[in-house]
Amino acid sequence: MKIVLKKKIRVRFQSPLSRLIPQNAQQRYEREKDYLLKLKNQVNVPEIISFEDEKKEIKMKRYNFTTLQSYLQNPSLENSIKEDYILQAVNVLKKIHDVEDRVHGDAYTNNFALDNEIMYALDFDNHRSHPNPKTLDLIMLCADSIYLSKFNLEEQRQLLEKVKERYGEIKPIKFALRDKAFYKLTFNSNSEFFDFFNKKT
Image (cartoon, rainbow, N blue to C red):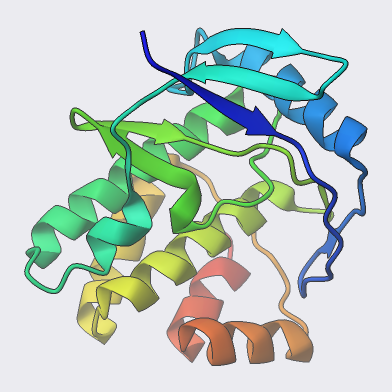
């Protein structure tokens, strides 16, 4: 069995809509360890070989992962296939949310990946402070996915309706002006996107 080594490093940065809580290497290691242990029998996450607490290292089985981000950036891939992969990631995210009210915290497309057509969730070491973190996870995933897929307005509408069907009730979120500015600049998000997450579904 091939093994990959993951080591925690310290990161600090701010984000609109939420505050990414500064954590040192130990805190990031402990959070990811806790998530992997709690999720392993309920969500597709990498198989753990061992934890090295003193070195703050996690040894995992090596996979032939291709990130969701890479698939969505592929111009030759049909939009229907891209949509299917996005909805698979939504399914995984919903399962995470159903395990003891957990959230991903960094649910962008580079943190979902496929191996043998199975969608996995990766990297749980970021901790964000927000009153509605589950909807925030969905916003991250959907905004990034729509942007990378270059979906037009009608394709966006169809995707978001299917997201609602897959995920179930989505708690509405209030976007401040700076939040809208961030998503417009970063993902070219439009008013219909904001309205979708700003109303009770």
